[in-house]
Image (cartoon, each protein chain N blue to C red):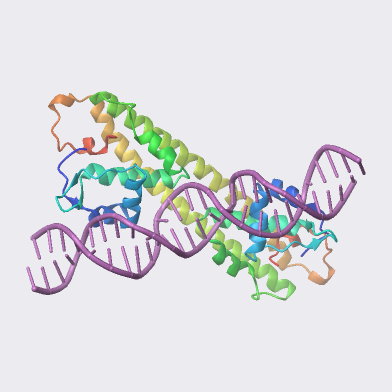
Length: 143
Length: 143
DNA sequence: ATAACAGTCACGTCGCGTAAAGGTCG
DNA sequence: TCGACCTTTACGCGACGTGACTGTTA
């Protein structure tokens, strides 16, 4: 939408660390329309488009699916200049929330793992032949 | 493998927070064999099996795919009692590494996002009609 | 004119979700 | 015997990957 479209698809892919297929796929799904098409049908993108792909990728990384992302970004929500900025900040805020939730979950699992590790470490100093079947650490041994 | 198999599939699903389908699917793929089958064909699981599902889930959460996980867990790697404990600790260590990488990536994206937020905040105090096309924050506004 | 891009089908994959139709267990 | 559980079979889906073949561009 913003600035003059100068990037070909492979350059966008490079900057956003995605495949060409991903960019075309996002277009198919209505999440990303190229700013311009050459007479021959080549897609041309602006910096705004690159940033949009990055935004989509960050959202995907927090577990959100494309339909939800599309709903967020297809803003019949904002039309004034200032409203656009406000809406963008709202979206980025939601993104931050989601990322935070992912972090919390990762930390929870990390703690779970640490507890298991300290349990299993005891097995190293244990005479396995004397260890009863129901010894809790044994239930964490692989196999 | 360990302890007496007392859990039905739905109890395993509950404890590991997955669906019945997921558990059966892991079996199909050779990641999780029930400890016992009743004469009628019902799957019965032990606490070890529950822990194995949880382990698989934590790995999945760090972006690893089922084939890789299977390779890790199908341990022709360890057969002695002590070797089992050592192998388990290795696997848990790898899991911790992967989780750490995910965290680092999330933090990187979080920082990227914060920079964009501070850019876009400037647009709130900007007279949009006087703002040039190439103003960097504009390239981050949605639409 | 030629190489390095680009384009469109269209089928494949991975990790399950989701009926449908029937068998098992206390 | 009855209801709550379980079973298999099998098709569907989201988010792309991966050719195969053709067209565009500097």
